[in-house]
Image (tube, rainbow, N blue to C red; front, top):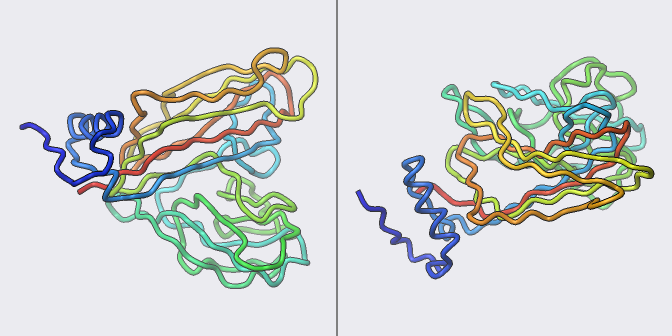
Length: 275
């Protein structure tokens, strides 16, 4: 059956968006509309812990933890600070809960007040936590951890694999070049970028954009290399747009040849609603 683009989209003359909508239907059987969603998405992150030979997500994680552990239950339920000074701030949070069928459901929430190095509970436990920002007028000392309930040492989870998002010390928002797409959305990625920052000598880095669909494994969709003695940063546009299916996880990872390499990266594009 032919696909009719009949949603009154103001992008009807934009071939790239129309093609992505058509291709989504042809590939996944879902009719989607960028106009109905009317939302773009930018995810950016930074790691200071890209070690030689390790594949590391470009996000803030505890030292020695290279990638987030992905959950099949709503177990992210806690937050705390590494500083006793953080006792007045609240947070705005974006993330996803997961249902019994494995569907990711986008949700937003505002936390109660942080209680320094003592655990505080999230109002709504999550399976994915994708973005956090300080919701108050007082800057954080940090670092601040969002995690599965576990033992703490001076406010930091003793088991770093239980951490799913961090605000680095002195930061008031998360830096995580990874996200999830809900069961009602697709993401048309228009570009990605990455750069090696504040490193000296001849440092090389391989960048990968990886997608994991529901009940699958992470698979590489784009790759490129960087070097401090050559191209140390690069913006990669996608045409046609890269389609991230509903119920998927997506992340930027880096593998370097030098310990403690600092790398930044971002992914951006349009969200499209299943209609």
